[in-house]
Image (cartoon, rainbow, N blue to C red; front, side, top):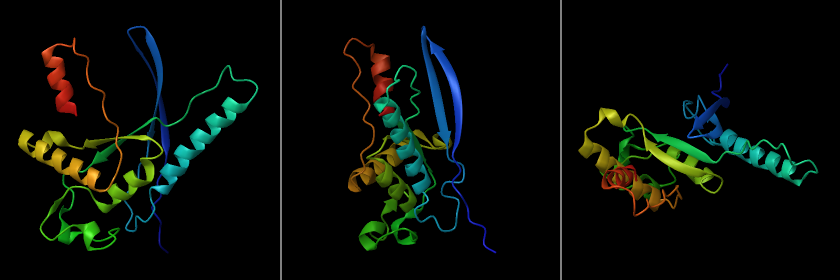
Length: 183
């Protein structure tokens, strides 16, 4: 009997207060995402969850009693990208849709087909912030190269990601440098 891997969705609620501003932050985790042998449409439970939260909020907003509405919509997806990816295009299989999708032989790839499918499915629904996971295991030069390659691939696939706003002109230079490094 084959055991199917499921994408479990777990919610963690944290109350934060900073400079007098109170915020209830709900973190939605998806343990099991991408762990199955066959990851076809494994992003679907995540997309369905996001859609359900928007529908519930819309129903609450459309009702008569709108004073105590809980906003459980998903506003941002922090998507962790493995720094150890698949390396080279000719080694890719799985969800690829042909040679153009897999890249030309020898071209370095950082996004797995699963990453592309997931972000394509969700970028119309939620702000996506791609994060290079375990970046502390890489040299600064490797991080920069990987970030640039990932940005190129995201552009190539037409995936819209969250664009951080420009910092104010009155910010100090150190902050501006940090802001630029994050982008």
